Image (cartoon, rainbow, N blue to C red; front, side):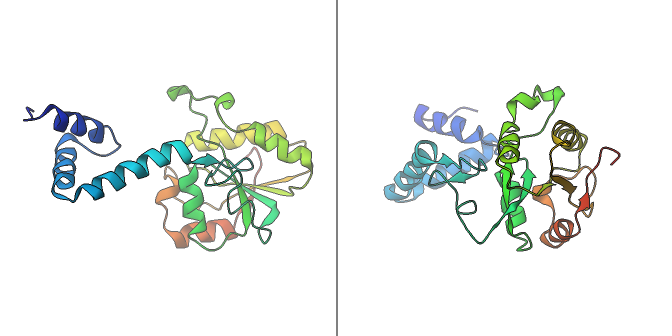
Length: 203
């Protein structure tokens, strides 16, 4: 597609690089911004720059945060003995929206997937051992996608740490097999947290 401006073409290239946005949609968005007051585009640009430069990762759970520790980890009313292991921040948001979970989290940053070149060493698994060595956690809940990769990740973590004095459980399969956690409805996800099952290698 030919564009009347190299500046416009560059903007379309950048916008279309975002997930789920094709070049036609990118062009519509770029043209929409050009119709807005300059302050609107400047505000959007600044927010993206701030996102990249100022976002922090919580030192406890690896969630996104404005500070060294996120609001969930710094909340003394949350149960520090209960840790929910999830793949990424979208899963934290999904579970928090259920209003059924009062513990804390640990974000792995993905799941084991040999096909995509992701191994255990690329995940935040050492943070699990750190929490175990601190001796405060009584239960880890696996809230991973109901996929082969999610099950493989849970199995690896269980085998690695099963000799520690801690319980492992898994959210109930109210979540359909093959589903990503972030797309589950809040009622099913909430029930899965409340009705979690003991995790063992036979599952």
